[in-house]
Length: 209
Image 1 (cartoon, rainbow, N blue to C red):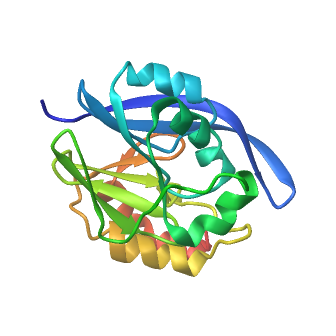
Image 2: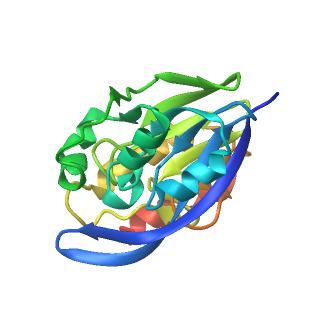
């Protein structure tokens, strides 16, 4: 059976630099009827486990370590036995939320994760966070961008651990080089495509988005 993409929205709080904001997060589940991976275990481990519907969870993949993307990861790991995977450059952010629970494995640029016969390639895309990654699944025609690329622009870079020039370089060099019809599944909000976002790059740079 070909892998499919299931989508869950969970709600909670994003906290950084002394501020707190209510947020809705996209949780992506990639797999078949037998096994799956979860991309960003946000806010509600029980809801994510319910959405898995008894499938074996092979990994909990973190696109970055802002608290709203990882707050449910340890509880989901405890419930399922799945390893938590994070790029090591985001470990300082992770430890702000989970000082007593380190990730189980490291994500590296070019690493391939396979689930239900489908390969997802890890793309290191720093900027929103130092260890931010995207996951590209060419067989599904999709890239999961976390908070690196949204409909209408790059992720926020006005807080600690972020850099606007770096995120622009990541998007230009790692994402906009993908086929234009690649669907973009984001960490928050509506999906888009590489082809829809690519023409806006110069405008983002002018705005200093």
